[in-house]
Image (cartoon, helix red, strand yellow):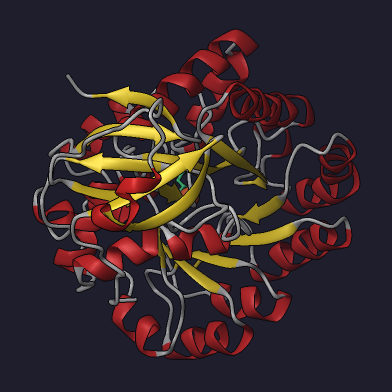
Length: 391
Ligand code: NIG
Ligand code: FE
């Protein structure tokens, strides 16, 4: 993960939205046709667009009131136990019109792109009823279709127990299996399914039932695992052959070994540790030492991680996860693309892949993790088209 193929005085050629050649400027100069558009990066670093492999992109409202309460000392769990947290965003999302959801989703996606993200995973999970979950997934589909940022949709109907099923999580899990998952699959609205596997949300045994049903219907599996407690989430992800296990702040050595044995990619979300004001970050080094292809993502959501910025996550990875800047770049490009089945299309500069590239306002790739709070992306290109230029 720490070996980047850096090309000094590099250049890339793209035609019809795809990369055709990668090399030094000297090697490629005489291949440039007379009518080609030339973009001079001016000695700055050019990277593949970031792939944000874990986001809760579509929701209505914010949780700035709860944020203020937490700034005064209340905890995330206390607020959730009082009916706030995920359920407060569920209430505002259910109340929003389709047009409002689309508008807010577009706004979030624009923030992400301005940080250098050109492709992302997007979860549902703030509807928790058949109709409202379908609405969120259709919004994700519309955002993907409108472009330019490419999206993969994940059905997270098991993000919490909705008010109609209060105190009856077992019944809601059965409803997910019998009604919601089949409807999502019938409309081809998701490629992945996810469950918030956590005591007081979905137990390991409830999570297993939901994930098995999703797998039978042909969905890939991603799992919120071992975030707030060490509860066997990583082992479950390994047992089910999930594509990813996400969060893992409290995973133990047995969990890491299980992930390595099953080839499950860890998706680490240090933004959520930071924004919850917690101190225990996921053990990234042990995972890298175990040979795991670690991914870093924003977890963009209104509760635990209101950041659209991959560079901010890279900063946290360096300061708290003790990952080098090079490892953080691998984790947000090639490894992230792999976790979404997109490695043939994205994640590196190779002939045939989409020309998704970002000119960052730095001369040395390490500055991406070093400066924090800096909006480094100066120009963003997706499929060869300039989609953003900082003025
Ligand atoms: O990934 N862990 C569960 N879901 C989100 C938080 C959701 C929320 O608070 O709205 C997360 O951290
Ligand atoms: Fe999440």
